[in-house]
Amino acid sequence: MRLSRYFLPVLKETPKEAEIISHQLMLRAGMIKQQAAGSYTWLPLGFKVLNKIVRIIEQEQDRSGAVQLLMPTLQSADLWRESGRYDAYGEEMLRLKDRKEREMLYGPTNEEMITDVFRSYVKSYKDLPLNLYHIQWKFRDEVRPRFGTMRSREFLMKDAYSFDIDRDGAVKAFYRMFVAYLRTFRRMGLTAIPMRADSGPIGGDLSYEFIVLADTGESAVFAHADMVGKPIPGPETDFRGDLEPIIKDWTSLYAATEEMHDAAKFAEVPADKQVSARGIEVGHIFYFGTKYSKPMKATVTGPDGKEVEVQMGSYGIGPSRLVPAIIEAFHDDAGIVWPVSVAPFEAVVINLKVGDAESDAASEKAYAELKAAGIDALYDDRDQGAGGKFATADLVGVPYQLIIGPRGLKEGQVEIKHRKSGERETLPVADAVKRLISLIEPQRLDTI
Ligand code: 5CA
Image (cartoon, rainbow, N blue to C red; front, side, top):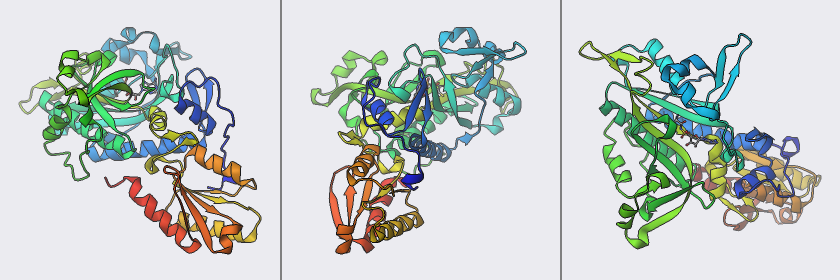
């Protein structure tokens, strides 16, 4: 992408309305624009990051055996009356009427609709297990939307729903999502700790939240220090095999959110291993049995010919919350420091003297070679001073800067700046692209 042709409305000043660093940086880096309380336009740079996050989620959902579909945002109130949640959900639900006075709602979640899809087609235990997911916008009329897209009213959610013949099958489905989540968040560079949680309005008796530790997190959390940086299950993990040993291992150490915190149990954790911190909930998984299948009559015939209500679970991730969560974890005084796997661009070519024949030629060549090698590259070809270019590159957090100018080129040299460490390497222009590829490829984390 040529920056001269892109749309990157960066701000010089820190907007006053933004209380936390991720919100400030998303506004300053031209990633989002507020449209109303808790409602945002995703500008090109923000949208690019959001899409990279979505892509990782899709890959790991697919790996675990889940199948993607897409349900509408607007739902019929009648469907929600069947489960009894239309009245129970309260003011968080945005309710509306169409021209025929039919009551509708903007979906805050999709248990009812997916149960309706399921019961329309699936009739036999032979079609189970099944896990269907979609990535769709949701609306919750939050009392206090805040922190930008961290807690917004309109937000993107990946929601998956599992269907099984019995509790044993449903628990296995829960385990598959649990492992998929460990892999998903780590691929984004995050340490997300699974913690026992309260199931709230979704219901059910088994629920884990995946929490990223951050000082600005909305909930207090308590965990054993060894939960941080624990190695995740690798790509060889057999999702059709027995995942219980992995789950046992990941749930044996203490980790709980405030609502489920047990001070006496936490006291048993050695004092030097007690982590009491704040956290951001980036994912939440639930097992709730027949809570929806029973009232909505979602049944299948079992092996003995009898009708059984299916056992269900639901599994959410917030991609539009993950963007600020990752920024909370990775930033410095100059701006965002993206992990390569979710960076809007992997490298930026900075032409220090646009209009200088040699600088232009070397920059164009490097940019073309990076693109040809499959690197997601940005080319700062704006006719502007070097200071502003460096500041923009640092602010938007591109992991590697390839700096090309007439002075270096006289000696046949260019510079690579590592955004994270600040380290700079001077190297022959002919070697720069190869060097960048060797730095970037291992950090994509697409094979971990
Ligand atoms: N139906 C279940 C799981 S599919 C459900 O709705 N779960 S949830 O309420 O926990 O939401 C799932 C995820 O969506 C959360 O873990 C969080 O990452 C994200 N999320 C929830 N509310 C918001 C919000 N207001 N703004 C941004 N993200 C949100």
